[in-house]
Image (cartoon, rainbow, N blue to C red; front, side, top):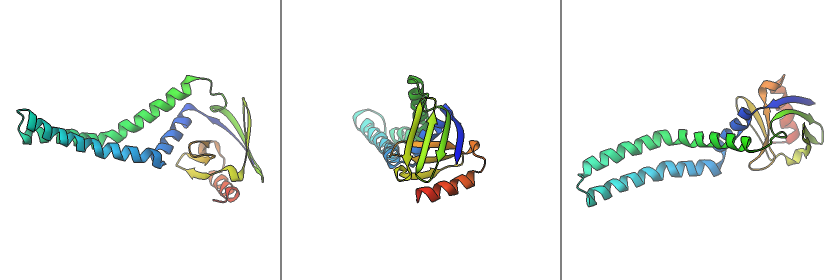
Length: 170
């Protein structure tokens, strides 16, 4: 089976967002920052009321509002940073092998991905995880990298999914 597809900067950014939302290494710091910072805000409110001339209810209400805003809006900011950093990485140098036209050949032995820069081959046992979202299939070959298959480029996404799952054995 051969799949011809084109990867864009948006595809790469979407992979990074997907990975950060589903990786324990990314979600754990997000949750810690989301919880610890408001606790620190409340501690600062107590500190201001003790040291300064600010009454505790005023200090608590001010920092309480700040804490609620932090809890509500910090995840959006966190994912905005991931998106921005992914775009920066793409724009830093030549990424011809990552973005652009790809031809993925699937066989009994594994897959090969051909681009304008060359070809990579991987046996099915080299695929560590198979993940998907509404728009992509992700064939993880390590904890942090994956072959990105846009579903928009596939004639039969469900057929491709069944084929890949049968070969990977996950």
